[in-house]
Length: 316
Image 1: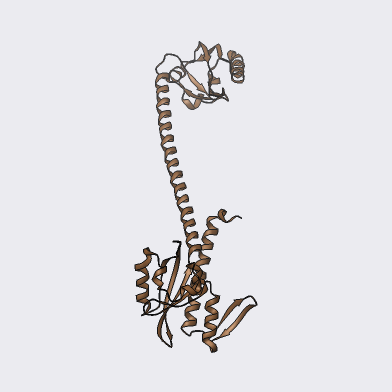
Image 2 (image 1 turned 60 degrees about the vertical axis):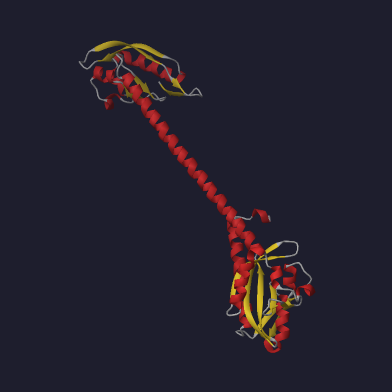
């Protein structure tokens, strides 16, 4: 998978891994300096080598030079007494030029006050904070600066460990972008859902109004009328039908209307009705319907299919 195609979960895992490595490295360095451990392992070209603190100065310098983190020792004035090559690479300066410079020269203006606070606190107790380093080309590097005092023959000095946070910050920004995109997608989905709900409510209201208008018109004409589904089942009768037949809706709904047709007319009525359903042609026929007083009266039946935009029959 290409680096720019990392998933949200992969970015989150990478960020957690970098944070864990950063905390682990800081804790190890602190333990060595505070004398909590008497040995450490350095990985070089020949593999992992075990060092003890019997020759502290030599092994300490080897360890510092092997670190990926920048390491700097300052005197009370902020002058750099010692720097490892990793810090020199961070600020894009030759190692020999870094020694003797004021550390302030490498702190970005926006981080000056934060840096000063860390240094003031660092002379009294171990502390850490995030600052921006700036090299001579103006490139900014986000770093975690950890400070602690170090006893030298010449007196107490301040030791700084600087961990490059560039990869972590990039991952955090990618996570933020992913989160922002996810939030925007959720907002869009919510807006679409709200619009859909509004549309459904409007359409439902329109259908209710249309249905009521249809019922009002159908119930106020002198003819009997009904509608049926494409399969032939009747799903609506107007009031004139009930007045004429004296039956309730449930008695003649669906195919129940057949019991109202005169037995001698039923076969021809069904033949014409089914042929109209199959062909979609106009249904027209004369037959007799049973009235509420058990007498039959002749009627002219006429039905026209209602079609959708695709020509499919909705009902008749």
